[in-house]
Each structure stands twice: as C-alpha cells, then as structure tokens.
Image (cartoon, rainbow over all chains, first blue to last red; front, side, top):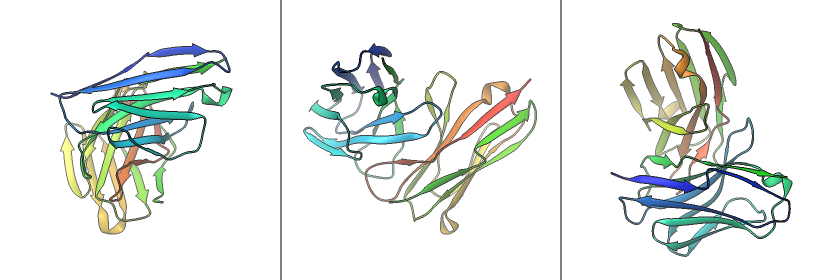
Length: 113
Length: 108
C-alpha cells in the first residue's frame, strides 16, 4: 500500500533562518506531488505541485521554493523565513494524471518567531 | 480559476443530530473529494465523488455535477465528527482547489 511521510512534524524557527521540509511517498511510482499551506483557521492554499523529477509549478509567488530531486521525494525550502511563513504545511500525492484521489501527509507545524 | 464555496462556515450540533454540508463550485470538474480535518490537523479522505451518490456508514455524499454542487450528509453525529470538513475539486488540471471549509462542533 502507498504511504506518505513528511518531517519534521513541528518546527520553531527565527525570522531570517532557512527552512527545509521533506516529504517522501512509498508504494507508488510517478506520483503528482503537492505542497499546501494552511494558515490558522483558514483553508488550504496550494503552493507547489510537481508532475515529475525536476518539474515544479508554483501557484503563489513567495519566498518559498520546492524541489523534487527524486521521483518520490518533494522538498519545501526557504533561504530566509518571514513571520508570515508560519502555518501548517501539508504534503500530498495523487496518481499521475487527473481524476484520482489525493492523499495527505501528517503535516508540519511551522512557527516563525 | 475555479472557485469553491462551502456552507455553512460554522455548525454546532448536539450529539445525535443530523447535518448537511454544501459545496458549490464555479466550473465543471472531473474530480471532487470531501475531507475531514481532525483537531490534530490530519486530513482524512471521506469520499471521491465527481458525480452520483456514495455512502459510508453514517456519512453519505451526493454530487450533482450539472448543477455544480455537492452535499455531505452526517447522520447521528458523534463528538468524534468534530473538525473541519473540506471539499476539493480538480477541473481537468493537475492541482486541487480547496473550499474554505465548514467547522463542525458536536457537543456531548
């Protein structure tokens, strides 16, 4: 069966520090991969999605970036965090192509102080 | 892009009551899903339902694609049903657009 994991689960970082959140999927090949952000009490905002290695689409301009160095690995990064980057970050995957279920990881709580 | 609305934004129920949550979307879709986000933040898939009706225990969902809405029914609600319910749609792209959610509180 397929599983998705992301880490770290909780992170407290000072303003201006770098960020790296990692997500891996097991049990499937060529998945679509996604990073979403959820601000407190709000809905989910799509940040990045990827349909293959090295292929990243950005939905929202920001100081975050994403990379997909391997088929089932998706990384969310920042060189310098802002206070407004605080939130709950969720990695997700779906089967390649459209019309399939999307599955989420456990989420990472980021607090920028 | 496609717009997704959900109603009501907040709902408070007594345990055992029934409820209906609504999701409206602005364009045709090939994928619609309902999720439950528990108090710990985890998103659980409830239904994959681009059209038609499905049931799973006390939960059921109906999507009328031609009229661009979906309904989630919760019967005999329990305190463990509390959380936020999201619908998400994909209109033939490769990403999912989420609605703002309905926050449900079930009181004992």
